[in-house]
Image (cartoon, rainbow, N blue to C red; front, side, top):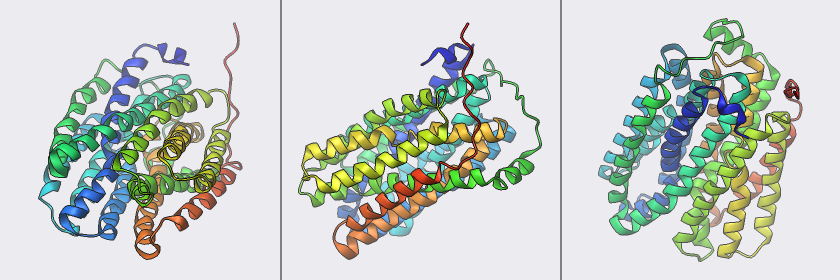
Length: 403
């Protein structure tokens, strides 16, 4: 699986990017654990908090193409360092916010923008430009697994911090932990890792964006990724609330999030390997289709702790494992020169879906007293995403010749 990363410098670049994503995504994907204690402390209400986190979902996506364009033009180092620092600052000042507007600014704008700038589009783009094409699929899978490992590690840690220090103390602790990503930025962007030459012609950023949006396959990729964002943001934000509705302790929610992260480590590595053997659009169709089946099964099963754990493991395998095949399709269609920008735009669609998933989940629980309509919508969207990926124009996988 890792044979393609034997190219000089490829493994070091990949591991550095994976480490950065472990920290930024590990913190971000655990944010739902704060909803209940913040609500208890401030009395702002679930709808207000859901809106703040929904804004965060959108901002995290909106910053991706901007950060990607800056990284493509000026290099990734400044973008990544700025993102990490902004994310740490947001965590440090969030405990001082007692209004919905304040939380929307810190969690919805600052933290989301910081984590987005130090996330998939810039990291995968930076890595892709520092290794040959045949290593990029595997590298994106390993980088993605880093984010999942972060969720597995940080979800139970943050839950323990909240229980022992309160949500404010936990926020300050995460601010300090976030700064651990800074040395890794230096490793990823070190001058010893020279950019790999691009075989494709450089038509300029504006023309690259124009060409991408003139391609129907790019739009179909956006539509499928919208569903992925809806699904993930709904669960990250409202899984603790669903667990509470079922009369189970908060630890079930934190361990479910951790299991999702653990399972996605394997899912991400599988996805990185699969895109070297199969067309990425088929990998995506299988992933989205499996989500629809898993949600149906969840709704039919009794709501016990083990149901949540098994459900989390099943969903976790495809959780953010959609990232490597999506990035691979973008790279195949348009090359690696502006991959950070063009893949960043697909992440914006992902997070528009994320905004809807987080926000509508809050409205559903407020108006209906449960999340049933959200689960139904999730099933329909996942099935639709599976089908919509099939017509994507994607070159066949070129397998290396056997010596």
